Length: 172
Image (cartoon, rainbow, N blue to C red):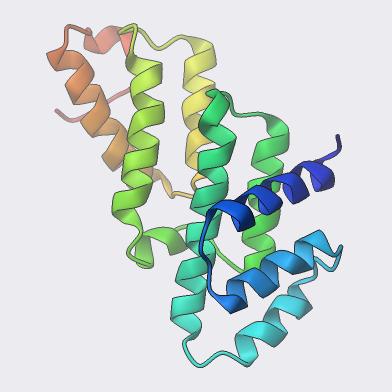
């Protein structure tokens, strides 16, 4: 299945499981109808009184999609590409999710994934790359990612991990 079909499958699942506003449903249906153009989203945005509310809902859709992607515990290049496509399509930029008061949800999802990388108390090269992919997946700037990663690393250290094995430099 190609990236577009995989994205459509994920969108279908989200539409079945989540209760989105009519505007968000309309935008998601554009994906299903092969009308995934930024200009189509702009038409819906322009007809909406609460643009910030719609943007926040769309950022939540991205987080919902990320949750689906992380269900199997792996982040594939295809999933990263899909999230990037959604961000572009929805007009969500790096850091927007934090600014849209979604920090607690991002922190919750990201903490679960980071704890998996710290679980064996050693960060190997593959896990270090996974952390970079997670930062990209969630659209976080370095400072926002660092803040969350630091908390998880501190917890790993309290549970017996040694700083030298974590592949990170924190000001604990």
